[in-house]
Image (cartoon, rainbow, N blue to C red; front, side, top):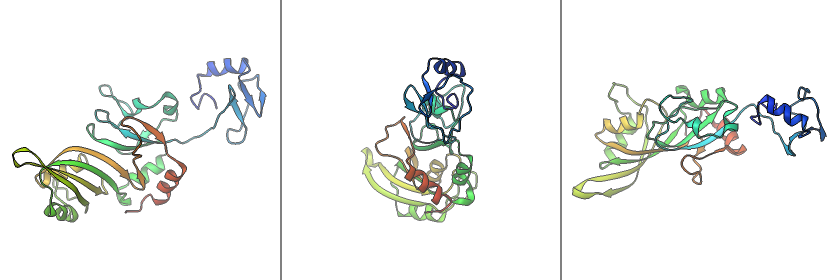
Length: 242
């Protein structure tokens, strides 16, 4: 149990037991092979209660330059951002964000939840904020609402595009700050959607997935466990489009 929770190697756990640092129901144990019920028995290591779990749910604010994968020989992955004890249960990213895209990424080992959130049939909302080179206007909003044709001929599902503000740049150019809600996850989809209407995404950040919203207090590259409320909301509303 202790080794599975990442609290040490099996040899380190055996040593801790021999040193009397492990208790079960308040009594020090001498045998590291003693049978325990991880959900019922009260186990402590060095006076700290050990809570056993089989699943893990982490909210990560992915920074640029990190890839959404479990391993890679060249680039840093999102798992490299986790503490060793949070990698023990083998979480994986639910979906992917491009290397240069920031924002919300859910990491879990709950395969069923991941499937529900990623299934094309479930139409789970994914909300992005972006900076776009060019003047995004009503024609683009209507085009996205109708579905745009990507460079490979694929026609996207209707998407909700909102212009937050526009800033004039030098020499008559403009940068538009937008919010976009899509229900798909095609390769480079947001960037390709804007390319389809003659615009270019220069910064992209995901801020929500289903009911799960990126914690504004979570610094880039940081993560935390989901709250019970976030997890219950995500599980109860998964598969419902907003």
